[in-house]
Amino acid sequence: MDKKLSVPKLVGLLQNGDQKAYDDLYKLFTPKILNTCKKMYLNQQDAEEVVQEVFLKVWIKRADLDNTLSFNAYLLAIMRSLIFKRSRKQALDIAYQKYNIQFLQKVDNSTEESILYEEIKSYSTKAIASLPKGQQEVFSLKFSEQLTADEIAEKLQISKRTVENQLYKATKKLKKQLISNELIPYELLFMLIIY
Image 1 (cartoon, rainbow, N blue to C red):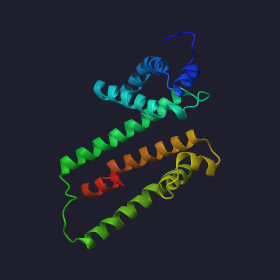
Image 2: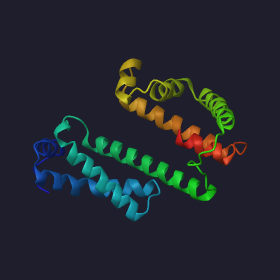
Image 3: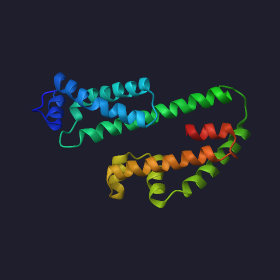
C-alpha cells in the first residue's frame, strides 16, 4: 500500500472507481475483519467468505461512500449485518433439519393456525414488554412501523449508532428468551425465529 495515502484519501479514490485504492483498502482491512469474524465464532472459511461479501458490497456501493466518515465503522457495520443474516439462515436450516417442520402441507388447519398465531402474538408481546423502554421503542419502530435505522434516529433525535446498538441488544435478549423458554413448542420457536 502506498504509505502516503490515508484511508480517507483511498476512500475518495475508490469513490471514483480506482481499483488500486480498492486493493489497498482490501489489504489494509482484511486482517481486522477476519479477526473480528473469528471472535464472533466463525471458522476460517466462513470468515473469508464474509470478507469477500463485505468488499463486494463496498465495490458495488463505492459511489455512495463518504470519505469524511469512518470507513472502519462502515466495514464493521456491513460485516455485522452479514454475520447476523448468515447466523439466522444457519439457525433456520438446523431447525428445519432437526425438527423436520413441514410448511408445504396443503391441509386446512385454519383453527390451528389462528391458535398458533395468538400464542405467538401473546408471547411476543410479553417478550417485547420485558425489554428496557429504549429498546422497546426502537424495536417497535423498526418492526411494527418498518422504519430504517436512519428514520428511527431522526424521529427519536438519537444517533444511528445508538439505534443499531439498541436493536442489537433487543434482538439478542429476545433470542435468549426464546431459546431458554422450554415451554414453547419447537414449531412455535421456529416460527418466532422466522418472524
